[in-house]
Image 1 (spheres, rainbow over the protein chains, first blue to last red):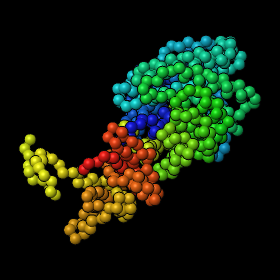
Image 2: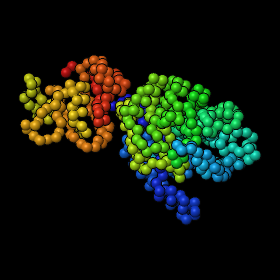
Image 3: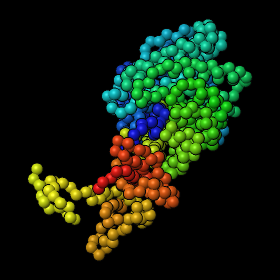
Image 4: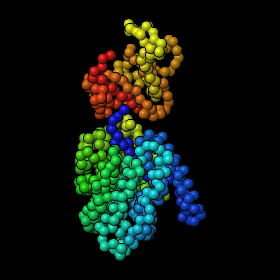
Length: 368
Length: 140
């Protein structure tokens, strides 16, 4: 037995949506079925996802984000004040740039919260497992930066800072509500930091101010939150994830010191699954006692990594951070966007998660 | 509880009649009996028991005299975790040095102050986890 419980085998959260779920959502959007019918399909799919995570040997469970269209849905569905538009975005693939139509959410009015960001999610999960639950939320810093459009958002808010403060307060309230519901692990997702890493997404000047604003807003969402015993807040920083494509490349070095030192989360979930991710050196900026979750297993490719090689890489990172403050996970979710699932089959997804648990057993022993 | 005076190996009773003597062996799968024989030989000094004169069983029996491990050959290995077994060692530091000399990785040793024990895990070539345990004040 092991005496520590640090979720050494972790996973980012989103899972491949079953075809029946995608179809049910399409039919709701087309007005062909009622939302209650979609909820039944969601429930069934989530029950399957939880069974799959148990079978894989994981010790922390998510609902796969099956009630969400994409990684931003929780907040944009809970608030009035967003409008959407379709934009073409350049994604990267092994063979070059691919343009995909993506949904952009824009703050076009004062935001008005209509319901909890994770309305009903935990309640249903509790009917499926007594195990530890993880819930993901989009980071408020990302929303404040990426949903802002000059000439539109500034008609409702004086500044990004004002918008960010409101979003941070709502996120903080949601985290506290989740802890009150018994959730052990809340994860903020902020793919926006990728813009400060690298080549493909770097645009113009002013990154310094935007980065600092994002850090301050995300920090405000977490500062002062009292954790129940054993509970954690994590932050996942990814480089884009849609249909096995990515947006950004490069190591965490340019942002590591300020980000890791300023946002008071307990865990940072980082991508280290391929050469695009850079090395472990930026881990030296993770404050003492905090956990670095090494995203070593790729959700972008079906090839299964090897346990022994993964353990060796964890041992390599342990030269920088105490091994007990490391964890292993896939580098990102399997489907950050419901219709943009990565190019894996459900069986390949299961094997990747199985490998997470197996690698954690091999590296740290058993958590109880 | 009924008792018996008959002990084994010089042990003096009375013993409860339902008292087990000890765990005799555990049986885990192996995908490669030769590799398993070599690994357990190197790590624990176990020797293969030659059964060929008595039976055509494919089960691999390894012994060190005071304890046995059995392995059933399989083509595909299922994950055994969290099922595992624990082996208590006589000399903790010596055993870890022995593992180091073999290049076998073990998890960070953990102390259990409540019973003056320590433990760590190793993993056999098929991925079966073995907990190594040491008790500081063992009186038996």
